[in-house]
Image (tube, rainbow, N blue to C red):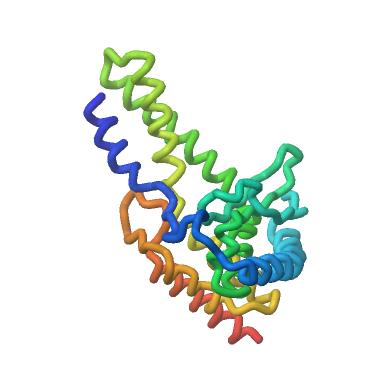
Length: 233
């Protein structure tokens, strides 16, 4: 059992988020910071209402009162993520480095819409369900081997949760890309230009235990969605 756990742990280590190349400690000209702040504010005010509209149209029993903000840690690496606060309100958070990393408003809008889509599609809850199921399965597997210590069972539970959490993560990302494209497009931004953001990310490839699909697959999904939107006009 111990050998099996170590093997799977090594595979799951490939599931970490794909980092961006620039560190937040890099020196950025003040003028660029001002432009980035204005762009972020403008995009937030445009995408926010559109995300609320999309949320209410697709998720009848979900809190759609989005709050869009900036991570208070100025040294946090470039990242954007979706969460839910203690009152159940959806929160979309950008780090300062992420705002500076975006090449234009289209990229900001696409990333922001993508994170909103994760909430609308219930990905956090679905991920939690997958993690719980994975934890149960791994504990059952560990018990079948016999002579399993309490410590090994706890480790199997944590490992199973990690595996379960990424089981459908690639599908979740593509789903969020598709709906995010719809939101950004509806708000007047160019999702294809926004998807150029992927070109600056290290390509995660098509790893079995990877958490993100290959960049080209994501870009193709955005292109296909934009084609559908333009034909529907």
